[in-house]
Length: 265
Image (cartoon, rainbow, N blue to C red; front, side, top):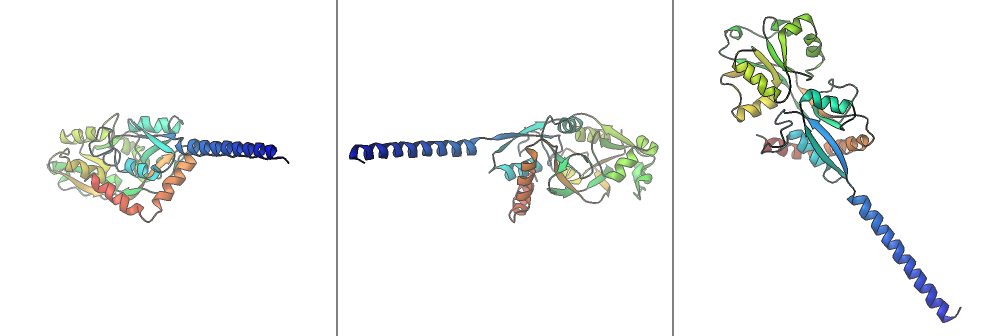
């Protein structure tokens, strides 16, 4: 092989290596820069899930999911709706996931590992004479009272089943639409209901914001329940659930979650 052929071959090899380098660089850059949008739905249940305008942030669960996905190729689109509407959008595969559910709420949706836990309590006013000598023993002991709840919320199998009975329909009154928690607080203040059934974390937060009625107290708290993120069967959700669960299992996640909770106190 003459010297000219050698030089030509070297040039061709150099061109080929350069082309391969460009293709690899393009592939790596494209792979790592491409992001996929995940649409998550929630209602006002602050500090668990808060309005986008809330100064402290969008809520404990939103912040935890954001932390879990921050090094992934997924970005969150936050959709703030009434609870019934949010659930409908996720169940119909119009959005990916629903933030802040109990394990029995949506049997057809897939849950992450439990994210936080809390309990629902019955709250009333100390000034309500009907409550002054009353003690909660079981759901039947609520007969004769009007209890404020929220349309579409799950409160656990036992309460949900009781709500559907004839007695339950007379006892429980659902708030509908946006700001349902605040609607129920107003009903309590105006004596339109005797009690409200609400999450303890939510009420403690609202107390700190001086939004709850004066002389409101808890009369009974139910057992603690775990709170999850629920996803439908859209193809990308399997990977998202896996990433969130991996984060929740890390040694540092409990410290991160505690810092997020403290942000809303």
